[in-house]
Length: 268
Image 1 (cartoon, rainbow, N blue to C red):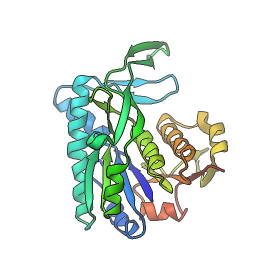
Image 2: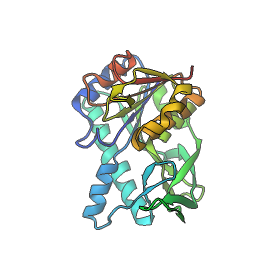
Image 3: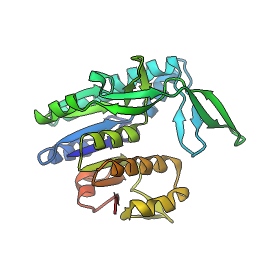
């Protein structure tokens, strides 16, 4: 079984024909769960609605959207509505039985609301701010995804989680994919992005062990660092292999599964 995370940059104009065609072939041999991004679209639509987006930086170098009440409403509308359904339509066009879900449906993703966040300002100073509507996933209810997988459907999951107070929370897409992969006992987690894989000194790293990854984390950018951390989290939960690869190459998933492209991270 595969869990595949599609980055928002790949989805700018909806899922590409090459990627969806490849998914159709992969689905003949594997059960698939898709997790998607779409942050660029959220920012654009929020701006059109007069709600400029604010981004914050964690002390570890992770950049994220600050999600207040108005933003979580827009985020839910764009991600669970527009973006999710674009992918559903793209898969349906290839004859795949796609079902769009968010983490709110049947409480698939349950999360603890972050009451406060430590952020770094432009001068590098740390400060504490209100956590807003962001969360950390604490539990996964796999009953509905497993039911759909058994019947031959492809679940497409939006990374929005349910708080203990039944509120929607913004949760990181890569981490969502990793935690879902662990909970569903997936064999492989594929993290699709807009670069070839993990790059060191301008060269793609074809394969790396989790123990080696920790030594190079300081040398890679924030966006890739988030994916690598998510990959390590998946491996810790029993996923056998994590592949970080470009979603815009020819047969992006098939090529990655055959280890022709991307970076393979293993627990050994």
